Length: 78
Image (cartoon, rainbow, N blue to C red):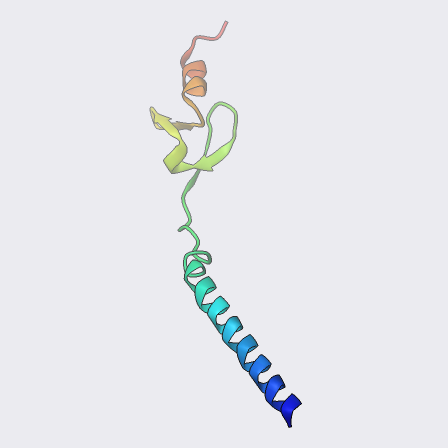
């Protein structure tokens, strides 16, 4: 009977400890599973790299991956 009481107290303590760990870990999970909405992809007119439209440099109806590629495409070719 004495061992049964000790076992019950240990089981209760472990259950209490585990439930508190779950409560502390719960606030970190909600933002973890959210994904950003999809974005339109464009192709660099100079090198052909595909990138999101929000990161592209646009000029004269064309999209470029960087300002350097925009400048290189505008430079006269020899």
